[in-house]
Length: 133
Image (cartoon, rainbow, N blue to C red; front, top):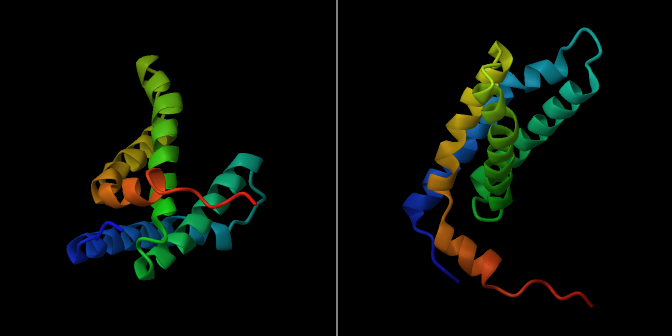
């Protein structure tokens, strides 16, 4: 198994904390206190991000076991930027809500810097998967 430095583990914990606290202050108040029913996808998005806050909080204690939280953050933000933000920006159709989401997604640039990539390759790419039977 590839060893992950203590510094990297603390860096990961700090990033999990940043995600958990950021979502706790922005998403959880919306989840707990919304006076009217939400449109479907707004409710789905807030629920998903609420779950991410809880999983990120677990990452503070188990930074390596919760690496899929970082993978999810990296992937969904990359998809959103590529499929939504760039086409809107290219067409000069960015509104305030999309610009705010774009800025939030661009803050995700720290995630690939924090991920211990040698550990990921050793344990997710090169290691044999679980047996099927």
